[in-house]
Image (cartoon, rainbow, N blue to C red; front, side, top):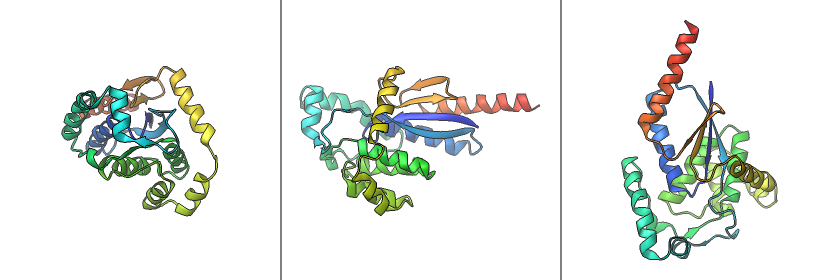
Amino acid sequence: MVKLDILSDPICPWCYIGKANLDRALEQRPNHPFVIEWHPFQLNPDMPREGVDRRTYLESKFGGKEGAVRAYTPVVEHAKAAGLDINFEAMERTPNTLDAHRLIHWAGIEGRQTAIVSSLFRAYFRDGRDIGSHDVLADIADSAGMDASVVLRLLATDEDTQLIRDKDVSAREMGVNSVPTFIVASRHAVPGAQPTDLWLKVMDEILEQRAAEDS
């Protein structure tokens, strides 16, 4: 098997789109060689733990309403192409994602990482839920078969908080400055929301190489 490490943030629309494109490729190659692991990268590591009003955040980041609209126009176009509906009107807050990343980490221990990542993306982009809320995170954990009561108890502590921050810093020190970033076989970095066809090509090349080695 080939390790596919994915650095992402559950409030990053390009990460949502990139995952959808990858998922479509994986569905077309049920014998795909990838073992996937998700890693933390916070778009806003200095975000207040309670998050901020989303409109205020976007207008501050992009220099006003018009700047925010210009920045998100390609997001809407690529999301539609990926078969995704992003409900921007339902998204009232931009959360701090530290606790969401803690949940993703704990899900990895239980072998439920991708399910949790998928649920976080849907909760935020489709349902407009505040994924900085402990109750929302516990509900998402429960929907993926994790023990919500344990997750709530862990979220009330600082368990693995520094681990997530250290991993975020480590990614930046490695040169990662945007997400999604995909790392294939610990060697090849593939930045951005790549199209499905690229992933099909990558997988086919890996499978062909494996077949040649086995022959």
